[in-house]
Image (cartoon, rainbow, N blue to C red; front, top):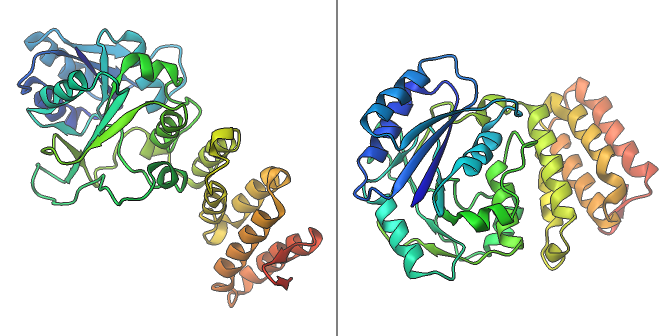
Amino acid sequence: MVSIIIPNYNRANYLRDTLQSILNQTSDSWEALVVDDGSTDNSKQVVDEFHNQNSKIIWIDRIHHLKGASVCRNIGVEHAKGNFVIFLDSDDLLAPNCIAQRLKIMESHPNLDFTVFQMQFFKEHPGDDSRIWNLDTGEDVLQRFLNLDAVWQTTGPIWKIDALKAIGLFEPKLQCWQDIDLHLKALTFPLTFKLFYDLPIDCWYRKDSAHSISQSNTNSLVKLESKRILLEWVKAQPKLETYDHLVMVIHVLVSGIQGMQFNFFMNFYNQIKSVLPKKIKCNIILMALIRFSRSIKLKFMQSKYNQLKMSVVSNNSAIGKYHV
């Protein structure tokens, strides 16, 4: 049986379609656990209506836990009765063949801990957007995740529940990139997996709908804190030494530079610079200088540029063949 775990926060307007897509499954080997994150709309009423149609649709309240989609998903795993798990956002949809297709694959590949399937974007209804989320580019999957390229979305995989528990589930402190963190743990544990991108699309990802619980909290400070937590985890993994994972460090830091976010960047950089190799510090500063040089004509940016430049000088850092 597959346990479908759905974190929810005030998504009653979409939740009805999501639950209907579960009722439409050609396989009845499933349960659906809606883990609510403190909704104030009529989400509970919607779930109760569907529960009356099928008692396998179950409402669970998040009580005495941290708030967030990651926590809700973890609670769902704790309550799950299935051998397999699929995570589904409260505004996304499953194709009618989704459970049957994924169960067939998992049962025919008992050596795999999880398998991954393609998702297609949609806006109002499936078919109105032709874009596919998880395309196979031929690049190393782990390397792509390390560069914060989400190779697949949370609903893409189906997991053996024991394998999911073995990697420690979702990190509750993260408000962003929870799926990247989980998938990095799966790839470095390592769990065994396979991509099945040649099969029919079996789920749809709703685009442009103020998507999911986590996106309501993606301000600059929250993003940087999530990046810091994720970065600390990456650096602690000896199995990643063979990868150019410090490219991620540069991406994490420099992506924080956007105008008045400069102070966030500097505070973040000062927190972790002591554990960075000198070469990486230089690359970070180079990227930052290039980014800020585009705005240097603005007077209020001049002092910030000088502040960053002084940071390089005080560290006696070199950028390639050139010294600052």
